[in-house]
Length: 284
Image: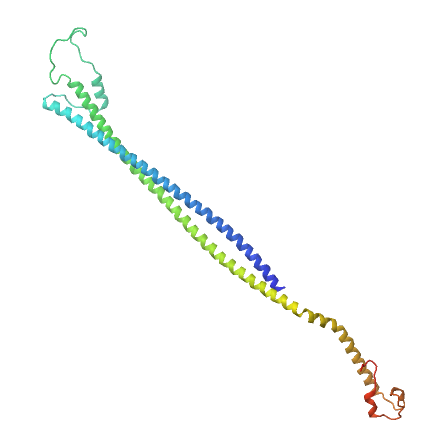
């Protein structure tokens, strides 16, 4: 009975460990999925950051090329007026001033319908329009420069934010990796405990079989002893009754009562006859 109780206890422990290992394995699988999700998110963030950085670099390069080209055009116009000693006055940096200058029409001192005189213009007759163009170029160059500076500031801020997000994701990934390792250790420990419990159950089962085989082997002898016990008790009781009768007879023997003796009617006790006496309850 004790061995059977131990086996029942083994079964309960094994069942509990199996459920625990299943729960731990499920938690590990979920953790592995979470790690994969974090890694995917980190990969996406890296790709997006690279794309943003590439766009920034390309835009900066385009703006720098535009500034270079516009600067060359501005310098060419400025040098042209300088070489021809044409004074265009102070160049305005505002875009609107230049546009207004370009939109202004020429002032007519005579009727607009009168045909112009056939006179050749000098080198500075369109200096106002040129001054407007130079102002526009200067304004565009300034705008492009501001755009580059703003883009650089935005790029720096985006990089800082990206690094923060990557640091947070990396920390989360490390925590999940540590959790996964801990779960693996717990699964290994519980698996080892279950293996020991299974081995103990097997040993207990072998002990139970040995006990059952032993009982089976001695059962015939036990059955014979139980069966013969009643007969043996009856015989023993008969023997005791015979001994008590003999004792009573010997203690109260009288020679005047020859009827208790064998067929010889003797008036005195004969020792040679004693072995042939038959007492009640005693079987030869």
